[in-house]
Image 1 (cartoon, rainbow, N blue to C red):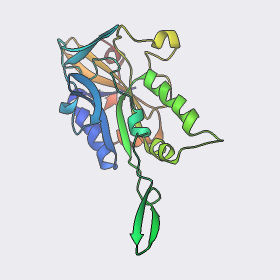
Image 2 (image 1 turned 180 degrees about the vertical axis):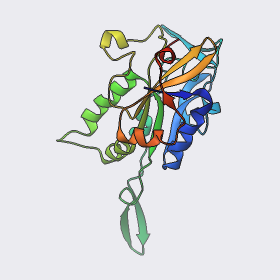
Image 3 (image 1 turned 120 degrees about the horizontal axis):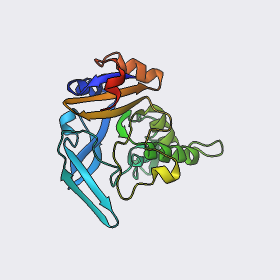
Image 4 (image 1 turned 90 degrees about the horizontal axis):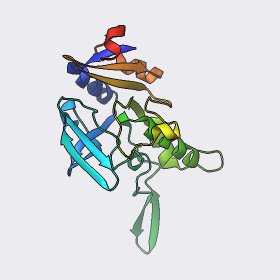
Length: 221
């Protein structure tokens, strides 16, 4: 376990962007916390949380400046891994004939870095993998986007009225494959992230992120 100070969080985003990733994370849009492209920590829902109960979803201010002080919102990462619209080909008229050009083979697939993936969402992605990346059938769009994805998971520090991770054994602690997993620790005058590296890609990114080895007193407040 290592510690990333809050002031150094932007270094994680920069390290990912320098490696060619489009960084996607939580942001406040239309009175909800949704997933969108982010460029710095200021794009995150700093100091916001959500209330979720039966037929209820609303945002409200927290008493601190947490970046991940909310539960899973109304969107999923699937829209980036398995988009609803993908251009497969073009038809070009040449005289009296039509020429079909495959755009899918020439288009470079996007390289996403997801920041803020919860354990339940990781488990959902695993189910998608079984559907779209199995031996009998594989979807090329999904496969390329999934193979290129960098996952920064986040351990949940609060729950909502609609959460089910305990009953389904999918959290709140991150369970599944990730490149880096974060636990946000805030309170008593400290604000940092406990980071757990889960892959070689994660270790490579951490080379460019200021950090130090975690002491027992820094793991939780």
